[in-house]
Image (cartoon, rainbow, N blue to C red):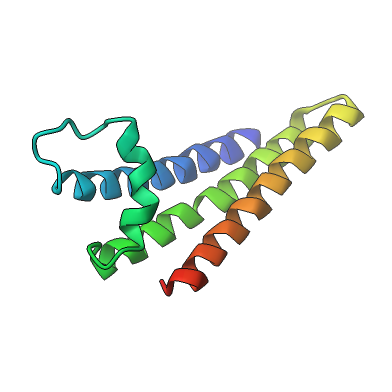
Length: 117
């Protein structure tokens, strides 16, 4: 069970990362002279994806791939619950990953509804 949850979490995090990097690649078309992976450009992704410059298909792909982070964090919470023998650490770790999952879901939903995605 742990192996399955680990593989699922890694896959879902990979999908979320791929979605982020595809937006970075689209954003790089605006700056052809600069390298694609500049640190400051990572902060421009949120502004770009909700702007009219971003294609609607890219915005939908971004929302879908970023939503994959939510079940990934829940898989990590389940891994902590299954594998941690100390009850206090088990509760803390599971609660932390569940809280991160809820926060990620709420932030993505808020951005989507606020910006009309």
